[in-house]
Length: 348
Image 1 (cartoon, rainbow, N blue to C red):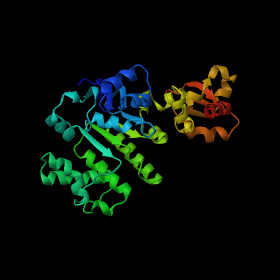
Image 2: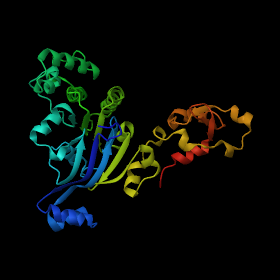
Image 3: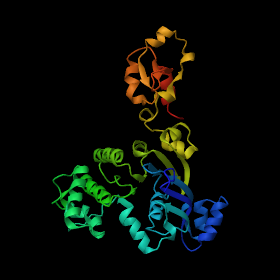
Image 4: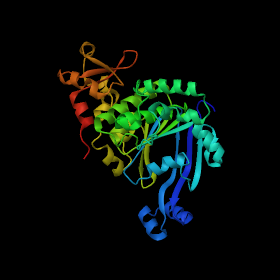
């Protein structure tokens, strides 16, 4: 597979529940709403002509409200439920064309999933839960147990291998689920709202854990959530889903600064912009600042990709603007108090 080839490539994917799939697809393509299609045909369109690709090592987050189709989408991608039509290529394989044997091989060696409900085996120890995938694949006992111990250490559960799942907190059980997913050394991991049942502080800890693991392991992740703040923390790109369709795909900055419609704008209205937007987004060109060279040289400086949250306290501590510089130290522009206030002003 060429370096620039997407590791996941989805084209024209549909999932229609009910017996009138072709008629439902025809009506949807003609612009009829999902609710009206359900009334007229009895069929429910869960995934509506979705196309996207994911690069190797990318974290692609799909978010939307309950009933938007995001969990159905990820189950179609893994073929836990069968798509009505469309194409799915993963790791160079045509998943739609694979028989049961081929799917088992993909799931054993290339793809793992982490769910909201942990699905751990209550009669097996934590260590044996993590080692289950390699056991199914025929890895010798001593090797799989050694690898499982290493993974437990990686997810912060060193010393817990001999315990049983019911002896662990919810956050710890989800760490076991993550270690189990990693045990087969997959290229791709699917996450279906894995942290949504956890308490807020534990949820944030798990997000931090996943961010650290991703920096270290560089796997390809498709992550489902209904929480925009979680999407902002984790995503390289975000797809916002509504009524089975992708209504916008882009980086967090693209979606926050240029929402495609009112639905997307509603998601981003209360977004923590200061954690996402950078000096580069707030600055004005140095030439327009009406500052002399000596005045410009005397300003505090930040890099162009510094997020607003990291330099707002410095900005507020002085009446002067802050100079923004590139990687070579050349001044690109300046950021004033008014510039930041304008950028962070709530959307009406």
